Length: 245
Ligand SMILES: [Fe+2]
Image (cartoon, rainbow, N blue to C red; front, side, top):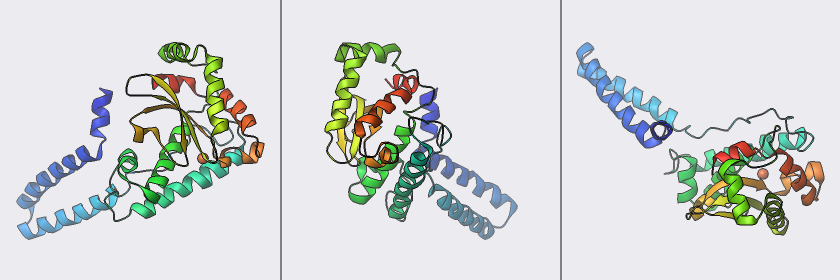
């Protein structure tokens, strides 16, 4: 049922649905008005539709208030990270794709089909959307269900998994992201991506991400990335992360 609902939300199916609507609308209008008038109304409807479909990518709303992650991530960090950095990637993306083949694509489609500035901004929007949805002030502190078993099988235990993830985060030079992903063989991997890199481009399913760009922690911890990582583990939304496995 969820897959069906998802399919109905895809741009391609929405387009088919809109074409069917236009076809029916034209027949009805021809019965009511003269043919020329009905065509004019259909053209007006198409213009409205074109305008509306230009806004398929929305700026995500945070799933919690700005101050909700305190004291682990401060309100000021959130205001800059979500309100300035994330918003800037979103605004840049809309500016860059306007009038291009990417205009009516989903974020995932843009990421897998673009490069350069469009890729960088689209991937940064996706990565931040995902990052905010990996965090929760009411964290369960540990994974659950099948993911818990898979982590123990792959890494030995949860503490060892965190140690290896932290090492990947500390060793990532410059700006980027550290991910827990499921590969095409259903196996877990810890992955580093530089800058705006995204595991979807490597045909891997993201489960958890940590933003290790300095803007994620500088206001709270200055240059101490290790301190930020310590706080990160206290607010991981393991319920959501585990459900993705
Ligand atoms: Fe960020």
